[in-house]
Length: 430
Ligand code: URA
Image 1: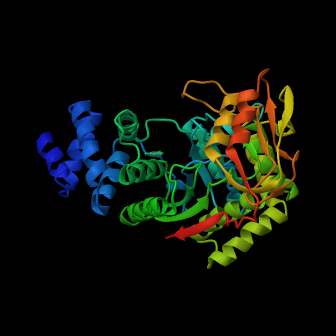
Image 2: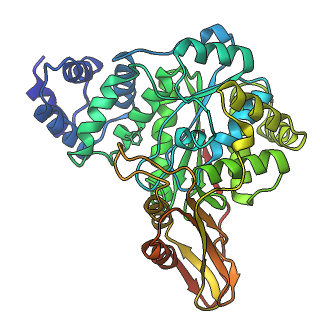
Image 3: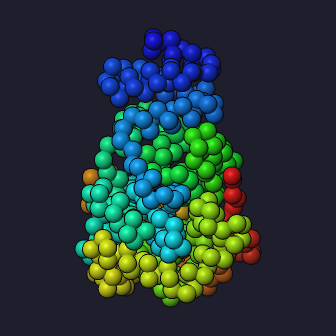
């Protein structure tokens, strides 16, 4: 097969066959096609797109490029979740024990945070002793025995995505819907998911800034799921403000614990967590309607089963549950408003960047993070404030916090008239 012909075919908007996409993917993984030809092909895809058959073929071929995790020994539907990334997103920490306490195995490989968004593995590592790197055998055994395990990505899963993503990053081809969709879905399928619930964040703190873009991504991923026999549901959720009130690592774990243990929560975090969990319960076949699934989810939060499962899970991975308490940064500094008004917008990405400046996140993937620092955001869109009211508290180990304080203040805008606010669950695509 001729690589230049395949590039030209896509350049002119023609449909590629499975074999042609196979030539591209395998050629790149096996080093028989150079970076410059794949870059050119990616740019052609960026402008011409891929149809549903092509996107599914690309996903399938990326899955086949490496190892896959076989969870069929569980003899049940394995449902996974994935978030496209947000600020204050601790939904996996809440949902994992809920699902598991309802008898549905939760076997998840999660990522680390980069840039303004956080990662579940970093958050869990704030718990003293907790291990996020388990050998595959122990991971599987723990899922079989306890019904829950959450680890960092390991092994040689989807090497084609690793290589292609690195090239996309430096060739201006990251923000292509079929490339994003196939990248995410290939990793979910390779890690053993039979069914997938996607939490697609929409808004100024998310990858997808508008509902239209998010819906397109959702539909593309749901279509891949249908073609590759993995039932997929996408929930569009609001990222026009951080989710919940804590942004960081240790403080986010504590917020998840407060929801599960004390039923003390911010409504947006509760609503998104319940919706994602309910969709997972429904896909797992444990409820005959979504409404019934929601009831089951709320029941295990209220009766403490989910929190009990959370403790079991943390201890199974050598974590010390007593280490989850108020954050232990050197200083806590309140950030207050200058004047009265209603909160009309929160630049969520800037809040995520402020947390990163404190050391809670990474600028580059080799940066170390400080698990004990972060931001407590005291306000939500639409809140009415008086001059001097608290906007946020920063938990910091730095001496000079001016840049962080200014970033937080600059991220929050006010108006003199009452503001209408949206719910945190925007749409469900299935
Ligand atoms: N996250 C991924 O895993 N892949 C993409 O392409 C974009 C975001």
